[in-house]
Length: 67
Image (cartoon, rainbow, N blue to C red; front, side, top):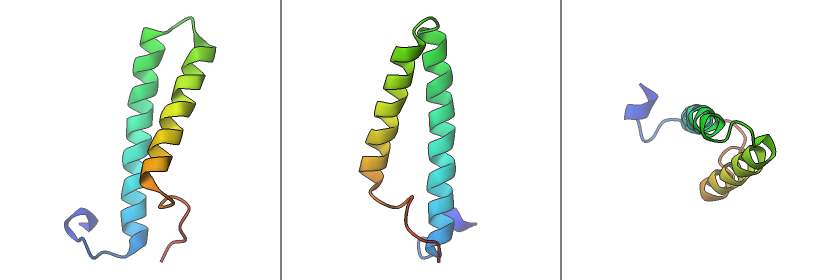
């Protein structure tokens, strides 16, 4: 329901963003594990870069207080 309400309280929007990001991260991680099975150190570096990039684009939405 919250996805249809652009004026929903921030806590709903942040929860959606967070869930979407987690889904994206899990899929990306699985794909990279498949591609670079023996290169765990490189994989971790790539994941950290992707995470930082997403957090930078999002701004401080994830850290903002609910309500």
